[in-house]
Structures are given as C-alpha cells and as structure tokens.
Length: 319
Image (cartoon, rainbow, N blue to C red; front, side, top):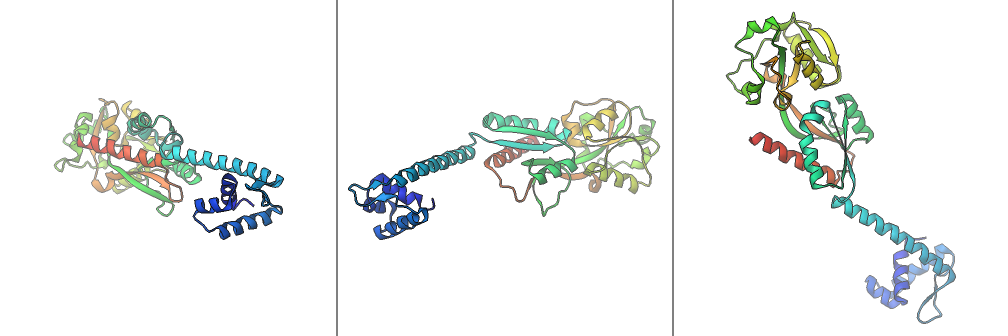
C-alpha cells in the first residue's frame, strides 16, 4: 500500500504528474501507471484528476498524512544511523577478565571516551567461559581474552603477545635451589625473561610447595596443568580462583606459587615479596585477542575502539 508512496508524494508536492515525472527521472506514463497501481491496492483514488491544479481526494488527504509520518520516521532513523556513523550516539560493550579490565583496557577506554564522549561504554568482567557465552548471546560487542575461541563462530583480532611466568613467594626455601634462574619485578619490566641467555626453570623443583591455580575454563589453567604434568608431578593446589590478578595478590601474600602473565607483572604495582621464573616458550607464549561474533555487524564504534587499542599497544611496545 505504501510501496509507491515516494511517487505519490512527489505528485502531491508538484500538483502535477508531468513535473513530478521530470523530478523523478521517469516517463509520465510510467509514473501514472505506478500511481494507479497504488490506488488500486488502496481501493480508492488518491488524486482528483478533474481539478487543475491536481487536488487530493479525502482518501488522498489521509494517505498523505500517513506518508508524511512514515517519511518523518524514515528521516529520524536515517539521522540516527548518520549520528551512529559519526559516533555522536550509540553504545559499546566490552568484556574481559579482571586482569585485562584493570590493567590493559583502562587507557584504551579513556582515550576512546575522550575522543567519542557521546558513546556509552560498558565494561563487563568475567572469566573466559562466561565471556564466550556473552559474545554468543550478543550481550557483548567485543571480548578481550587469551583463550582460543571457536573460529567458525568468532572473528579474532590479534592484540599483543604475553608470556606466562612462575611467581614464587621469596620465603619459600626452594628458591635457593635456582638462584641463577630467579628474577625480580624490575627485571621483568625490562624484559629480562625474553632474552635468550635467560634460562628456563624446571618447575619440578617446586613440587613440594603449595600452588594457587585458576579454575577450569581458561588458558592459564590448561597451560599450568600441562607444565606440571610435563615436569612429572601433580601440584598440591591449596586455592582455586577465578582471576589471575587475584592469584597474583594471593601469591604475593605467601599463600602459594602461581602462573601469571608478564604483562600483569609489568603493569601492576611491583610486589617485592615474589621471585619470577622463565618458562619454556612453547608453554609460556600466547596471543591475546579481541573477539567478536562472526554474524555481528561491526559498527563504527567497534572499529574505532580497535584502532585506538592497536595505536596504544604499538606506542607501549615502542617504549
């Protein structure tokens, strides 16, 4: 009924089929035929063709009122899309672990909101399993994680590489057996663990000590299990936690040994009560990705957020 409304509205504006046809770049017979088809669908004429200039019928007046409402809604939506494209309005939901949320994302979100203050940014803290569920349901636009998500469902954008380290409370006597391997937070900040002459520790040295592990469902736990298994022992786990940053603080208070990222050590407040040990590259090195669902439309806000994240990461690596 309203499929030909643009043609009818142009005839109404010009009060003439010939002028409207010229404006619409179609022939007058084609325009007349199109208007006639719409009138047939309505079941009543829109124009009184016996008047000069052309006038609306009573039905036509109601039709034009409805058309103008539709045009207002269409223009309103077009303006909304324009504002979204220009980032004058909209929202962006980001998900990450507490570690990424507190140490990696703050400067990115700060730069983004400074540049686009009218975009509402929501940050959701969760473990890897929950983040993937929220991505799948559409609750999140982007998720930052070091777990490999299903490539048939999600698109990944490589952000940076991190390396797992073994964090051991200094008070543990086992540190004395590997003095040549231990490093401080200051050395980690300078990248000592990435230098080829820095040896990797045998984690089996610490098999009698208590360990703090993350719960199942994330890459850190999977790697920690494998490292201990390859070293020939089953760790005595005294505490299982959801977040890496919590494990870091617990370890700093002497509760046990844990596996943490070098990025966490570099960006968190240095803990003088811990020694750090390098692990084998095949066990320790991993990529951190931004993920979004394949079927999800990538908005301008998502594109700009990723762009800012990469710019800040490049600047950080250059330092």
